[in-house]
Image (cartoon, rainbow over all chains, first blue to last red; front, side, top):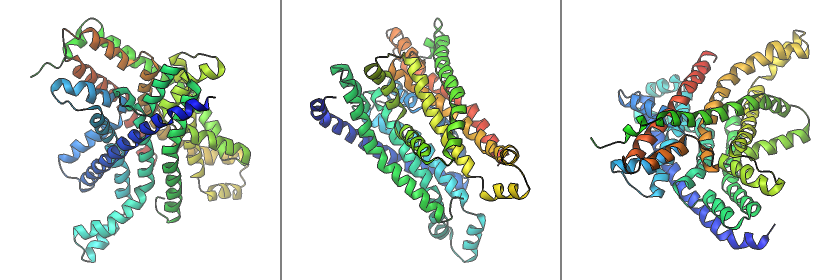
Length: 219
Length: 224
């Protein structure tokens, strides 16, 4: 074990971790927006659009992110849609994550009984109020554990960004292994930084899941 | 209509080569699934047991494998084992090792979840009916667990197939790698091949995973 080496290259990993985190967070934000949009469309059963949304969900859930990224990064420029690597990474993560988020939100909406909606209507609430005060609060608390699981999943998936030459943690580790043959140190730093990124979210997820279970939701 | 570079597919045996690449990915995931399902069943059952130390070790293993991106695990086995044990596994072997370890961890968590989702009163009722421990498991617990487990394990297979796309990064020649070779070779004659070929790969992965997902969804609905 070479501590000097670790100290020397720590800043490189820090930079890479920040990039991973930045792309991950932006990508997940877009994924949440897409997911919410899709879930609402499916909930209200909007004709035609709901078919497109369903097709999107199947397409994105049944293909790997790596393949999606290659298509976005190398394929799309050939028909004139060219962007930089960072935008491609975010777009890929949002495309993949959107469907996963949609599924977790949809299961939340499904968990709210029809009777809740009817009771709200009989109390004289309009459809906005029903959504805002009755359905959303219950749906959200059911979908929170699934949502956090998706966040972890998507943060993990960012590890393939190195394939489209983004300087993320994987890229840095592979680069350093190739340059200096300090395999053990590079791998330890890699694992350490991923733990640093993922462990807090994972612990939060476990805690929330327990809370939701106590609250009697999600049974 | 711009040139989408789809004609490259029909040149020589390009399409067959692509399918061969998919075959490599499918073979690796099949081997990993076949080993990891029984392993996961065993580990999952052990996790519901009473031995605290064993449970702690298993939990540590499970959480570590699940929290690390699969690509990191691949790097650890592929690059790390050479340095640490002086043993150099091929890319394919590393992939099988990683996906088996990962599959077993995921599977054991599914098994544990299915086992603890059986309410205590099921055990108590069986006892009240005078069933022995073996009878309780054979006739009451296992049938209920299996019903919950089968759709979830089928889903695990699709996840496995999707994750095998990562083996590109440790130098195994699979579908994306073959695609890169084809695109490079035809760079001058059809410069737009990247669009067509990557689109085809996207669709091939979809066609490999979608039927399996549908089956899982169907079983889940049927056995609810």
